[in-house]
Image 1 (tube, chains in turn brown, cyan):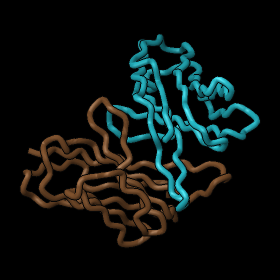
Image 2 (cartoon, each protein chain N blue to C red; image 1 turned 90 degrees about the vertical axis):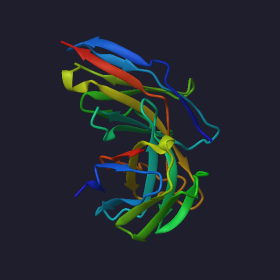
Image 3 (cartoon, chains in turn red, brown; image 1 turned 120 degrees about the vertical axis):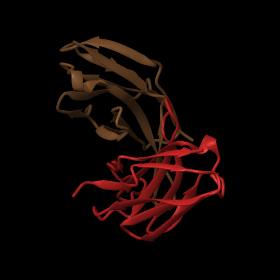
Image 4 (cartoon, rainbow over the protein chains, first blue to last red; image 1 turned 120 degrees about the horizontal axis):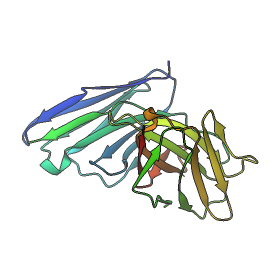
Length: 117
Length: 117
């Protein structure tokens, strides 16, 4: 199984809502990632989890709260978002690699298209 | 931080022709990895090909090959015998490796490739 799944596929929320994005993989990967992609732009790294611990937080506002309950699941909790947060949110997973190791392909999910009204 | 430059915002190519998508990069690390991803309009990021900095040969995967010129810091993607289904955004990316063993990808701005019949 080389698939990363994300739910929901589309999400529309108001600025006062609380919602969560979910991501799941069963490839035994111990690194999982959230990327944000605005229209006509490249993906930008938001968070990285390594062995279920938050490794990287790229100065993301606190209205985005990641959670990694176990090695297969990754959530992104959303609260009090702004219209400019509307974007495609991509989840990815990979093996954990260390300097000198070879390939580390990141497998991406189909994304959640988020619209904040 | 790594830097990736893709200088072709858009390209139109006739079906069955070969196409080269440019990518240059900047890094001070002697060990690095370069990736190419395809993103159709559906949004999913599809891994195409990987080149490691110490790989002796240019990477090939089916119709995809990498023209890797290390001294010039370029890693151009070559698609042979283009097909209508190749129409998509193409991103060049470099791996940022962190001491924790996790990594994130830094993407170029992408090239929008359109294959014409």
